[in-house]
Length: 395
Image 1 (cartoon, rainbow, N blue to C red):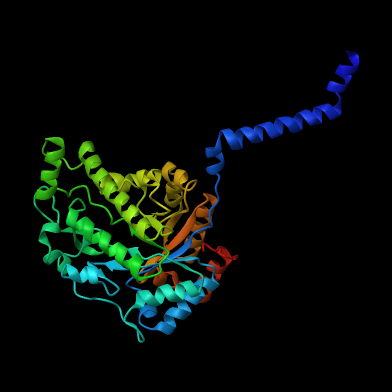
Image 2 (cartoon, helix red, strand yellow; image 1 turned 120 degrees about the vertical axis):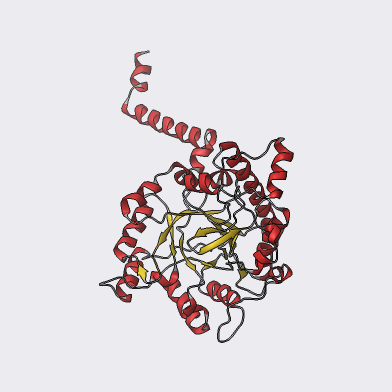
């Protein structure tokens, strides 16, 4: 008996026991709690930039476009988001748009009348993911043919007014609950992924409806049919917000399914506002979309003027939860026309995003290289080169 105890409690036995306990703990974590392992998944860092309708210099000349995308690749960007839907017009030759009375309004460069096709080809040649961006979503301008030729598609507030203000100026909103509107948006999206060998599609903070809207005859009738009640007069009523948000979610689920049926590997990207704003003000329940598994990439628009408020948003639980499931990043404003953001602030925001394990996308290309006071092109590009010092492919 004494011999047995001397062996059992020898230093070698203790080491063996420690090893066994370690292996057992690993087994329990991996096989009995796989979600914990999944939650630690690491995705390639998003390094993106939006190409807007303001980026005319690179859109009107193919050689400039080629040089610009080559430079982005050399700086180790990995994703571009070219706009394909803005102000009620498609920025590519679209039969779907023409079918509802929208005249062709495509950007032509010096060599071709299909700039989107050029962007896709050159982007892929440079190793960039190309994800077309449906910028305006359900939003359009009051004077657009989409609005004037399809008046029943436009929703309104309780007082009957239809025009709202946005960063793009005065706008009206397509009714996201109307089946014809839903079919039009779906056809537009499917047209793009069929027409071009793109890597996905992106929807932003305009694939929504401001909470004051939804009092049009069609939506009122639909609500009464389903609830046996009139819509609440208070547009902020929680049940009324949820009913409308759920309807938009239902549409996004169907849209995702349609996209995946056409192109199973297509990235279904969403670029919303922070969750509280998105849901409570614009009926966009993107956190639920993530949990439903219909979002393949999430980029939250954190356009904050200072670093402190920017960092505060990064800590939101919805963002931190999403990054464990899918590639997630934050949108960083690089400036507005004639009002660039200092590169030092951009650099600080990128570093903070990384500290919170988030990728980045810059809004937008033109202002990324627009010099703030005491800056020049070499300085701004040098900072970006230092931030993205090694490649991070997403292909």
